[in-house]
Structures are given as structure tokens and as C-alpha cells.
Image (cartoon, rainbow, N blue to C red; front, side, top):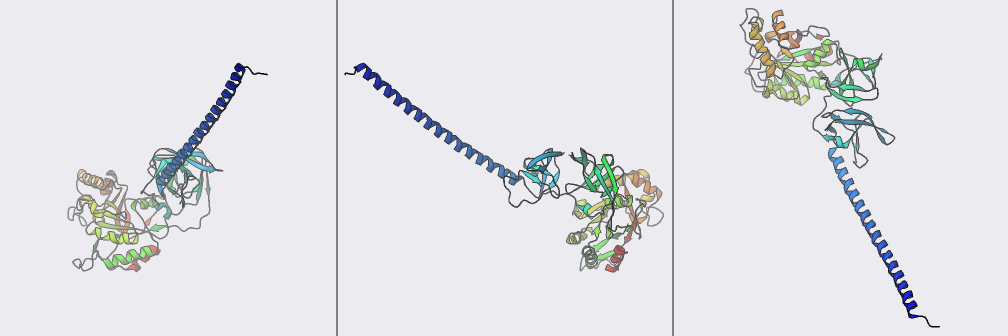
Length: 424
């Protein structure tokens, strides 16, 4: 039986079409697979690049101390999920726990000595540090618990952060309207009206009932014997005194801490002392000894005599000894300092100029230890919150903050004299 040519042609055409379609499908599927494979490779490569960039950013934003670069959230780790528990304001310093090997799991940095975290995106490393002097204070035997959704403040009562959950802590500073507590590795303040519970707790720590303030004048370097006065000090004397204080872990105060102590706002350790230096002549020679032993002191500077920059040191506070009224014979009594008899406008102009020159210090020292009700009222009016005299007695809580006594140190006084002041 013969097959008709037309049928053969149709069969061949169908066969060729099937083959062509099959080949087309195969080629299309192969191209699609290749395209998808290429896209997957591209995605993987992109993901790896993104991960690498994130890791670089995490590493660059980590430091032992960081600063928030914007208002941001605080978190806690809730079974691997980071839960929003508060907010912290921009430009706040935070100390972080050490991370030995930073990886992509460290997108949230844990704050030192706390359960709180902050995102790596919202901080950057800083060389600035948090003031930790409060760690030397003795806690009050009081424990407080805050309410929910409470704001915490710095020592200028500027907002720092808010927390949704209550916090329980011992009281470090007790002000009229605020409690100072330790939180996020720093001293922060909470309004007393934002505290839900206050309880008394037991405490065995000894606190200072009184503290001494000592007064130095002029230090003369080795080989310089040009001063034989009883208020001139040798390097040897200063070194021995300061070494004793450092070796015995004596807390060296600043003037604001003295004022807080007088007001009963802080408790100090029994071994505490305020080191003061009067006038400014040769006072720069004290700085190497302060820095050598890590001690703090206050210089009462006659601000017209020397530039403040001459005494630059993180260990030396600068306070006022008038701008230009440290002159004898102006008034008829005592050594005659002008602060006790000059016209009030003249005195106020001098005192205010001194404050402005010395970064608006709140601490003042009367020239020659001489004062009167007249001069005390003018010191108050000029904006000073405390003033120092002589007297050779210890500073006690509740005393007049404009008559703070000090012990003048003479050239003959050895370490035993300093030891007796600290330990008695």
C-alpha cells in the first residue's frame, strides 16, 4: 500500500515541529535555570557584601565608650529578641561591655553592668568619659523603687533617658526634690515624686562626721632657698604629704562635694580631705605632684595676677580669691583686705569679674581669712554659694557654708600632722 506524499509530508512536518518545540522548551528551561542560578549567585554575592559592610559598620561603631548620635531606643534581650524598653537622648555617653570577637550577632551593644542594649547604628566611639567620682561616696541606707515610664536626669537636671519599667536602687545623693542613683554606669537623678516606694536598709559602712580642709601656699623647687617663710613648702614636704594621702586611699574632694557634704546631700568616706592652695604664686609647681599621685586640689586664684591657663590640669580646680583685692592695708583692721570696707559696687564688680574669669566658679576664699557680715553678704550677692576662711577646725554638716574652715599647713608640718587630721 502506497503512502500518499501529502501524508508523508504532514507526518514529517509534525515530527519536525515536535522536535523543534522540544528543543525550544529545553533551551528555554536551560536559559531560565542559568538565569536563576546567576540571580542566586548575584543575591548571595550581594548579601555577602551587605553582611561585610554591616560587620565593618558594627566594628567601627563599637568602643569601650560610645556616644549616641541621635535620640534612640534602649532594648533588653528577651529570649533572643530585642525588646524596646526606653529611650536615650542624643549625645549621651555609654560604657559598653567588652566584645572579644565582634561578628554579625553583635548588632546590639550591651551596656556595662546593666541588662540594656543599644543598636550599633545609633552610636559612635568617643574618648569622652563618664564622671565616676560618685563611686567614692557612701550610699544612704535608703532603697527606692521608681514608677513606670520615668525620666532620669544628669546633675544639671537635663533629661538623659526614660525607662518603661521600674528600677530599684540604693540612694547615693539625697537632694530636696531628687534622689541620685547609679544607673547605666553613671550617677543619674530621679524626681522624688516619680518614686513609688522608699524603704530603709541596713548599712555597716562608716561615714565621715567631719572632714578636714588643708591650705598650702608656695612650693619652692629643690635648690631654691629664696623663701624662708613658714608658709613656703619644699618639694620633699609636698611629695611626702601627697604620697601619704595616695598610699592610704584618702578621697580628695572638690568644693562642690564639700558643699553637698555640708548640706547633708552626700555621705563621704571617713578618710576624706580637701586640699586647697591660695593665691597662685608658684601654684603650677603643685600640679606634677597632684598628677603623680592622682589627687585633686582646689586653687583659690587671685585672677588678675596669673592667667588661668597657667594652671591647666584635670586634677586642679580653680576658684576665686578675688580678682584684685588681695592687698594689705586697705581697711583699718587685721591685714586690711579691701573686701571688708571698700564701697559695695567696687567689691561686687571685682567679685563678678573674678567669677567670669574663672568659669563662673561657685567657691570663694576670703583674702587673709578676714571676713565680716558686710563682705559675706556681698559674696552671696556676687553669686558664690560657699566661702572659705581659716580657723583650723574640721568641716561639719550643717555649718555656715560661707565660713568653711581650713587648716593652714606650715613648712614644719610633717606627714604625722596630715595623718592625724585624716584619721582623728
